[in-house]
Structures are given as structure tokens and as C-alpha cells.
Image (cartoon, rainbow, N blue to C red):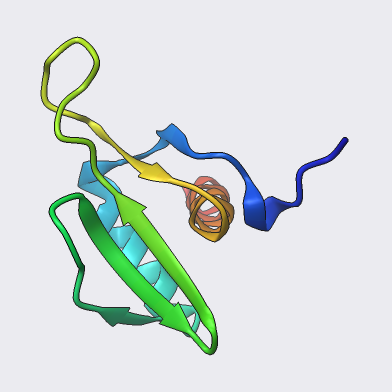
Length: 91
């Protein structure tokens, strides 16, 4: 069974926290609008037409340290992969 990309399970190893501003710029350039985050764990909230893209940060890692990656899932994971692919091409 293939899981559609828009309902992909969460990924905690795809996008680093330090690349989040670049990711937000990439999304803005592709027609997304940034909105204020809600709650303590949301670090990015974007909207395009009727779609919402959310990115979350964990409080701490399972080992108790500071998180290095953000959690992406569904449409945010799909766009994070596009962002990474485009940055590899330009490097």
C-alpha cells in the first residue's frame, strides 16, 4: 500500500532548525503566506489557498538534549523534500 504524499507520517530528521528561515523564504517564493504560530510547539505556519502547512519543534530529544531538527509531516514533509532537492541542485 502506498501512502499519498500529503498524508505522509511525521519526520523528525528531514529539516534542521537552522534551515527554517530559508525554508520559510522558499515557501513564500512558491506562493505560501506566513501566519502567526499557535501554541508552544509550532514554529512555522503557512497557508496557500485552502492548504495549511505546519512545522513543529519538540521540547527536547528522547535523550533529553536540545532538538536539532523540526518535525514535518504531510504537506510540510513534501515541501521540505522539494526545498532540499532544489538546494542540492544549486549547490
